[in-house]
Image (cartoon, rainbow, N blue to C red):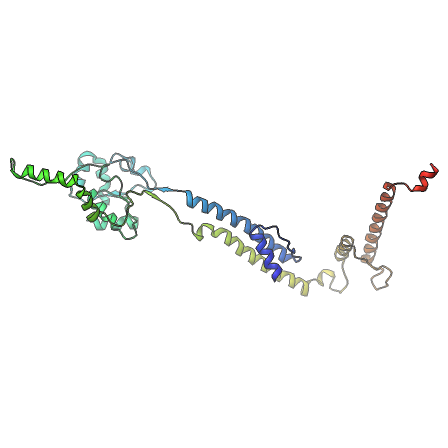
Length: 324
């Protein structure tokens, strides 16, 4: 068990440590798959880690109401869906300047801002066009910070808010000076940050990073699980063959067959195991025994040829030099 764990550990971390290779078919199969798994796992993890740490996912930008997403929504698959709240200044502006765009977005009109936010989160809408101050306020306080405002009110239209006074009123100059003083002192930015800006700052940070997840490397684990199942099947087949089926391949008589004799002879030649041919048995005159003798003779002839070649290549003796 310790050698098996050490082998798996060395394969995973690609360390050149001394290990003992398995001998069984099942063990060799699962170790081969494990080595392949280790290579793919390390390569995938390194690549995904680098990609997810470096890659930046940009929010889809819109250049204005004349953007192709609004003017040709059917050119996208699926079509780009956008809408607004009817009977407002936003719809009136679009209906006046972009009649085709207004005709398309009628079916995506929302009853209110809250309904529009729900439609955005559920995927019923791709974009919602409305007043920038309201959208910044709602996006800044959105749970989960899943909403992003684009343009800060400068892409679609620039409007302002004012205080209505009687023409020629004494308070006009006083109000103008007070507003300019508030803007100059930075109080307007403080009020905006306090009342209109929440904890979400997606508008200023339009780059979102992805998170490395197990699902990104699930394929290599599926491959390992499949290999383990195949190894288990191979293991069961080995034991079934050893205990139940091997005698059927020898003719169901208990005597070794021709293929068994050939494989045994080749194995003995490779590993140098001596086969005692002088020992008499019931198999001495069988074709299998003759095959073993033939392989034995071939091995001896090969050894003798190698020995003669080595003698011819060796230096001459001292006596040969004396008589030359």
